[in-house]
Length: 93
Image (tube, rainbow, N blue to C red; front, side):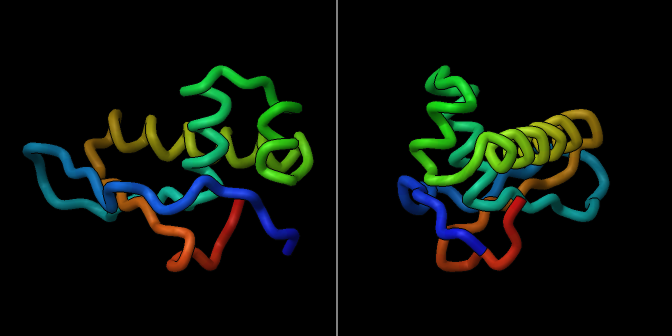
């Protein structure tokens, strides 16, 4: 796997719905967090985000798409969301 340039660990590790039945948590990987931060939060285009992360545009797109799907599943289904840190991550988008 090609190394990725990530800004570092998150200041948080999980989000949970305030009510509802317990359900299987989703896990947002560091690559997904970084891609979402660069594209959706900072407004970089995929090419700029790819250069920042040291990966291809396709990898950025897969990370953004996967991260967005997890976030919307969290909201729609009321599922908890765990955010893994760089040191804890084994799977990437």
